Image (cartoon, rainbow over all chains, first blue to last red):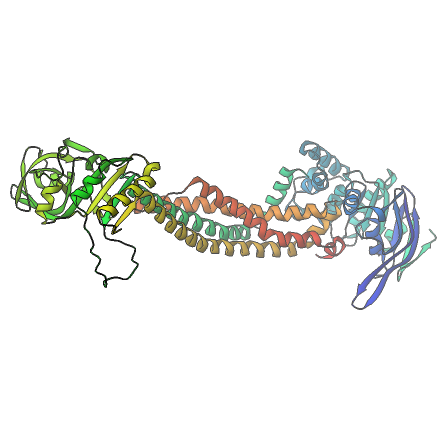
Length: 223
Length: 400
């Protein structure tokens, strides 16, 4: 489903060129659960952004669902993010002026889904993360774990095939972390491909594959 | 994305910062209110002037002695200025395109009756003046039809003069003394109001020959000519000019003024004044626009993380741009609407407080004011919106 071939990503910092990714080749099968680990600055976030079509490789090829993303236009990549890829962030990134349901409705709104359908689908997504009763609450009325679960509901409401999570438990206590990871794993069991960036060895251990990045290069750890 | 959803989303973002949004909209509101107020005053003044002049009809042509435009070498070759006489007026009577000719002399004199007296303007005219000037008679009749060079001791009073001297009783058939001579009152005019400061109701009308005697004049102050139609005016002006020039031995020593010409001149002056005043009001609108630009710029910077999220959720660059453009257009549009209401409200209060104030808002100006505010919003939102859409989503997500 995901195929990276010799992917490089370099940034211009002043005069110098800094390589964040140096020739990454990686294949991820549909329904896999992959943890990306490594020290900060090792390139794992950059890799995640490239997988999510938010960023583009400087060199190399990235095939997502058998399509070469390098040849896609900005519009087509936006469409991919909208319907095929879900994001979960460390800091949740919920809009504080919208209710939980309003936040979950956002991607459907951008996709032009009719308001009636949006409401039922948002309610459905919130129920699947166990927060149907919190639909009318605003983010500041929710706990950290609840916020992240709303963010997960938002990430999956369009029915993507790939879920990318950047330190999803980095801001949560132990109990909430476990809840969130169980939720993600349940979705993974239902066929969703899951890629998690994490610092936490416990979280990484739960993945089927662990890929360690350091200084832009990768090595796969035996599970 | 559906427009209604977009609008609701944007409105939500704006109401999230209620005070800030209200204040920046207020900037535009003040500008639009100023534009509405000042253009309304301009339009009111224009309509006032037009109505002042057109109360005499637009096909009236005035001929006065002397030349307003000065050229050539004065003095040295003498150059007698011929006066306008009753014969001049008579010579115009049967020219094509001319309906009425009214020889006019005027001056101030005392009108007395029954111990009461009043100094007023006396107009020496003929029977046709009532029709040519569109001055209807309320009681009795106007001066009778007779040769202009005949004297007659008949007069018609303006309504205010009649009221003041006869204290509410009908003056018809009574005698008054004007400048010492006795006159029989044959009519009272309908109220006409003021004409640029002259009280037309506080005056008396007597036959032109009698007035020339009264004021010891041998010439006329003015000849008024009523053209058959507005379209006939240029032809009539030419005819009058050639006839009078011939009578004055080739001297073009009189001035012909048409109502349309005067309206044109006033119209041009008013246009310039309105434009200048609107430009001043426009400056306040510009200040409002800068306010919106500032707020939008701050908003884009504050909401960098939100922009990153929206991009991650699949909103295109164009979508982000549209979002912020609509936001500033909405802000300015709301300000514009508020300004329009304030402008109209202030206008209503002003006209209630100062009834004489010429204040007239044209629907076109109101629509233009609101349209302009929307345009201001789009223009001042353009730059911030470009910045928002140009943000790198990865960088934007990192901001928190």
